[in-house]
Length: 310
Image (tube, rainbow, N blue to C red; front, side, top):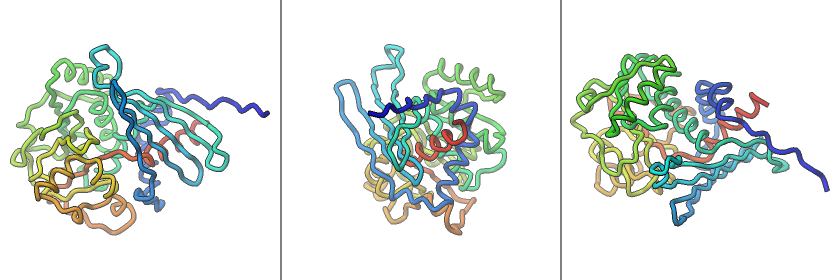
């Protein structure tokens, strides 16, 4: 019986600092420009537990197989335990030998924010955008760092009900050399980019509050009955999604806007078109990126991390 070497553990510091946001954004772009079709990715599955939910996310490419298992426990924050926890494992594609592991929640943070950054770059993000972020948690922090890796924000305004969380986020960003301030919905009128990274189940703002050339990235929900954006905003803008079947299954913002008659499924634009065709972006219109989160994204980033660090 052969004894295999244990899988290499890649720490959060190696993931975020040694590899980092810029390389993670490049890994997403390279996967799509290389011809990968998100529609061919394996579906994630959900497991209901007494204390929350588990997400199983497998994927594979020519070099690697990846498997992420994360849990979502809504009551954990009250016990000072993270709401999202998990493990990601990378395997050799040919032998299925475990190669490396990392914290699943950390990879989710890096992946989600860097996918958003890669997408909004393709949606004609200004070089110095006025940025408004809804939310003050880890995803808000990661998204600001990711957007700052591909642009130089003219201003950053943070909107959240948790004022203590907003203050902490501002301090944490300052330690990275990024200045931000608490904002209000009045800031939406001049925002070039609005990111929603919340657990909201109802729209966070109205269509009339944003300018007609805004980019909106909705990343907070993967549930069919939760939304961050109003249906009429989805109807007036062009909606970009990772994969139509995933969006129609999991993206509440999309599903409810369709049910309300604001959007038709055939009007959704899959993001692969931004990377593999001559799709023309109308920078004078509202552009919406609705994230669902897909397994291939974790694999693209962690596979590139493994090759860069090992």
